[in-house]
Every structure is written in structure tokens, then in C-alpha cells.
Image 1 (cartoon, rainbow, N blue to C red):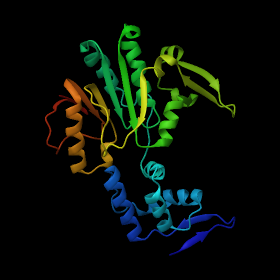
Image 2: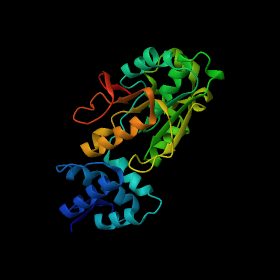
Image 3: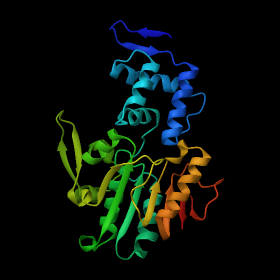
Image 4: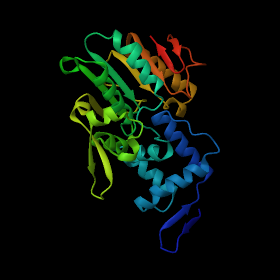
Length: 279
């Protein structure tokens, strides 16, 4: 085992052996369904070294033992968080929101249920909340709820706070900014925007590992699982698609990322347009 220490005395890099990499990939797949391919050793070493430094652990064996013994599963969630990409933005892949507004919402009567699966730091569910406020003129008297879930405590905390740097709001229409966001400064003097109560009251955030039991029963009118299944192998994708089918009402829609599709999977969905399927 080789450890490099910087002149400041902090751990700068630690060797990741083939056995340790295999142990990490096995943990990710068994507990979260994530498939980490060979060739990612450098990425894993670089990103997890930061966790070793923060926890003041000497090597990857000590770190993996720490993860396995952490009954809260918080460090496992942190490990997933640093090894996957939480890239998201408001109105990302905007054609999906256009489809919801033009094709889905006009056909919904009564209660509305939407699930943002893999919501990351909250931009997607808050976009959905703005869309619902705009799309349902009777929303004050209507039962509209958006469930937003993620495996990471860290990004869920960001999402629940509902506060974003002003520069991240560039894609939000100015009229929506005026109606649904307050302009403030954080403790450092940086310009930020805070979600209005009209958005917050529609969204429920919850921690959820997609590989474990799902407590919600549905049915949902729409499920958005976008840019999430790229981390899973075909068998796990197959299982997820079947579970999504069971939770959607007849006529409900499944949205996946534009870099994803259900091609190669056995499913009962009907293709509607790129990355959009209907039950």
C-alpha cells in the first residue's frame, strides 16, 4: 500500500488496488444498482481520496470498512454522490416540460401525482412545481403533489432549502422568476434566489434508494427518471421499468433522459417521442 502525503501533512493520494476497486464496484451494484465499469479506477481514486481526507482515514481498506459499518448509510450515500454526476438545471431537456404542459396536463382531471425519481438538488421538481402552477389555473383548490426522491442526503438538503445562486436561474422565464422566486443575498453576500411557498407546498422531498422497497403506492400520472438509468446495467434497468409501469395509472407517462431509451428492454410501454413513453 502506498500513501502520498503533501507538504502540509494532508493525505494527497492513496493507491487503489484492483481488489479495493472490485469491492467498491460490488458494493455500488449490490446496494444501489450502479454499475461502475473497469477503466474508472482513476476517477474512483481521485474522488474518494477526498472522502478519506475528510474522514482522516489512512487508506481505502479503512474507508470501505467505515462505509460498511455505518448503519446510517450516510457515508454510502456520500460515496455514491461523489462517484456519480449530479448535473442538473432548471428546465433541463425542456421538450419534456413542453409535452407535460401541452399533452399531459390538459387531460388530467382531479388529483395530480408526479414523481421526480433522482431529483438531485431539486431543480427538476421545482420546475415541475412552476409548470403545475402555470398549467392548472384551479391549482389553489386542486390536489397536486410532486414527490421528489434521491439517495443522497447532501443533495436532498440542498433541494429542501430551495435556495440557488442567481446565475443558475438563467433558463427560468423572467415572469416565472417574478412569481415564484425571491431575490436575496446569502451570508457571503452572494446573490441567491429562494423558492416561494407556492412551489414548496407542492413538493415533498424524501430519501429513497431505488433498489430498495418503495413505500409509495401511486398511481402516478407521470414519472420522471431522467439521466439516472445510465448508471444501471440492463437487468437493473429492466427491473426499474417494470416497477415504474406498476406505479403509473393507465395513460400515465414515463420520461427518461434524452441519452437513454427503453431499447433492448422488455416492456409494455408505448413509445410516444424520444425519451417519452406511455402506459
